[in-house]
Image 1 (cartoon, rainbow over the protein chains, first blue to last red):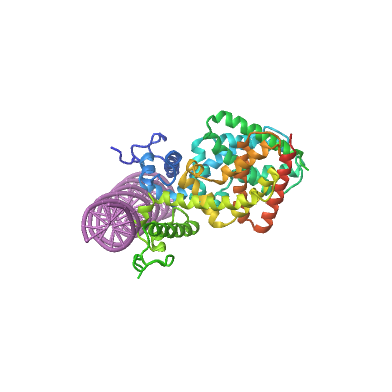
Image 2: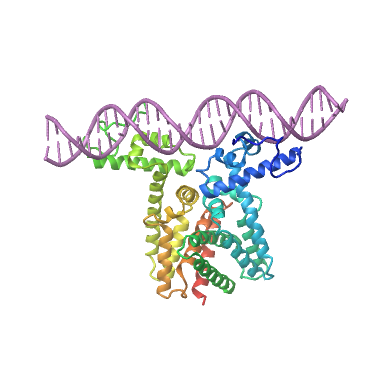
Length: 212
Length: 212
DNA sequence: ACAGCTACATACCTACGGTATGTATGTTCC
DNA sequence: GGAACATACATACCGTAGGTATGTAGCTGT
């Protein structure tokens, strides 16, 4: 029987017989976000029903609407998590190099490679703009675009590349890499396409550093 | 009364008392596409109901489903039209300059400026990826990305910029300009942001032409 | 002019997002 | 420790919107 789990039988995650409310909530939210991410990634935002999310999470819509205001907010939470994971990868790669401009390059490489994951791509690049809108994407606490901006601004401030406004270059890099990611995974030979893109990105960074 | 128009009273567009079937179809499709574009642009794809489209077009859903397979296909037709208009503007700007690389620059400028229109932006940049998918966008007869690719490839072939693969740079330009357009219209001073973006794009083009 | 096809209109079905309400479980305070 | 309250759900229901099946008026070839 596919009925929702009861608190008495407990979940698979928490062994305590009498979990605290916080633990119950956290576990439910985790189940919902996990189920939602899986379905949003494979089926897409529009084609994913909240009933399907609840069934996969082993919960009913009562639980979902208790923790999230609606489908859009649920997707927003999934998106925010995705951005957080991306930021961690980018920041880690960014920190491996001391030179400010080379650090940006490593961050860009990390973002590009992470964005090759079809799940990441579907959520953050294909569905998020239409589902959340551009402003809501930007207002997410830590987002990749803002991270890119900070890296670019720092490289300019430190004189690693000639002085210029940060915003236009930020858009070119962030948008360009996003588009690149989508093209690469759909190429006949994705691995070759990735190598080609990284080589070209290297040349672009060199050209930008050398420019007046 | 908001009833659908009858063929006997005729439309506002065609004065003939007995329009041919082709003319009837063309007029209806035109009405539907026009109404759909207006609503998709303002309300967005998901929030636009087909009933609303039909009401605005002065037609019923029978007519809509006679000419289009569904909501997605209707949006696809609107998107295709939008791409066509963009391509006309881009191609016109592209043709004003003889130098292959400068021609690409003018095409990019035209694309960027055209993409500042909120209607264009909402349809082609925000909703299209999620609603149509990336492949369907690419498979549209004449799309901006493919146009960019041709321009870049020509500039490389003619030696206007150092030899390099066309795909990565195409993605960087097309994706970067799209992102730029979305950032510009949401800037505090859009006009200043546009000027800044164009100046920066100019520097980018110079740097790419000068690179090894 | 009549048979047939096209171009719609009308009525209906179903799935899904959202809501209102009921209920069980944890928490707090005396 | 138990009563009063808050939290965390489950259940039942509604409205909307995409899609479909069927009917019909008008154009078209013969």
